[in-house]
Image (cartoon, rainbow, N blue to C red; front, side):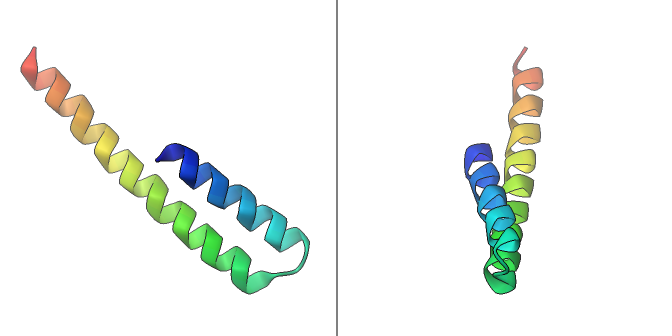
Amino acid sequence: MLRWAVIFLIIAIVAAIFGFGGIAAGAVGIAKILFFIFLVLFVISLLSGLLRK
């Protein structure tokens, strides 16, 4: 999931360089959502791993 967030961030940067503001804003929004979902799943995985031991 982190890979998808980075891909959308790169798409946003490239779109911003070429002047496509709407596409860049959409890609940044998707990248932010995916990154926060990744963080939540990472913390849940970390806590569940700690509780099992």
